[in-house]
Image 1 (cartoon, rainbow, N blue to C red):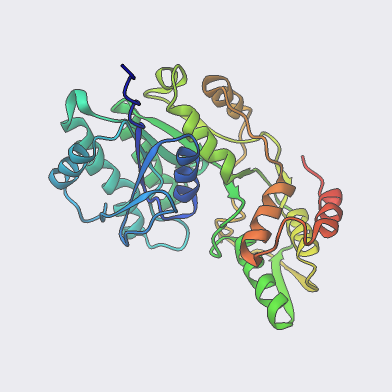
Image 2: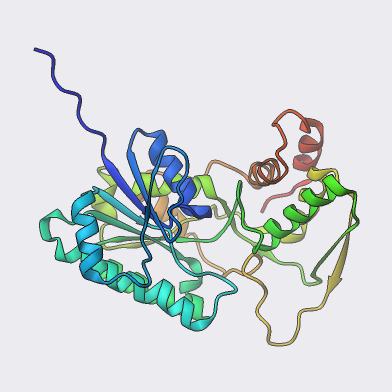
Length: 321
């Protein structure tokens, strides 16, 4: 008698319609998982099932009922408010929503799913509302036995226009279609920041849910990264070359006391990413040139071979750290 096929494991991604959440969904789908995505507008990547759930407004009782009905083995929180949101919005989305969700998770007792929270390296300094609210969420998640993966600056396909490089890529793509002139304003101060490809970050999430790594990282917060900071200006110049669009770059001095936009800011860290790599059995495999190429091809609809010569020249001039 033939045995029945085992049902696919189920993953729930909070914020699955967003930049990071979409890539996390794709990583689970590629491994044969059944994937559900919660968002306020019921959108999900192809292959995932979309659900309309507002994490900021839903109470723990409804969240617990929804979780019990779905019965996922893993929940990944890729939702939250980022740069540009107000203080109250950040407090509700980054801290309050996580506290309520963890209340719902713990109410399930032995049926509770494994929980992975996507945090940020800005939690270390916690000098901004963003850093402080994400740090509060991390404390809640780890106390409940969940895992937190702190992310550095992310880059790759779908990088939001609200970030520095994502915004530049969108402007270059429009200029490629319209022929308009492009002027990019950037800080005169040279900054070296760590960028992680969003697809590598999604692979790390998947690694954190698989045995035996899952047992090692329960109740812990880990920093993801490459350990190789790069010059932001070099990334900008490489992106412009990659696009083939003429653009002028103007440098300005930063305003006194003003924190740079989220796409440029970061914190200096030691080799903490090596700890995450050892515990997860994971490492970043995509360099900044591949991340830029993925960003440009996604925003411009460019085939991988159409600008191969430009891509190679841009990659050759890009110097990593």
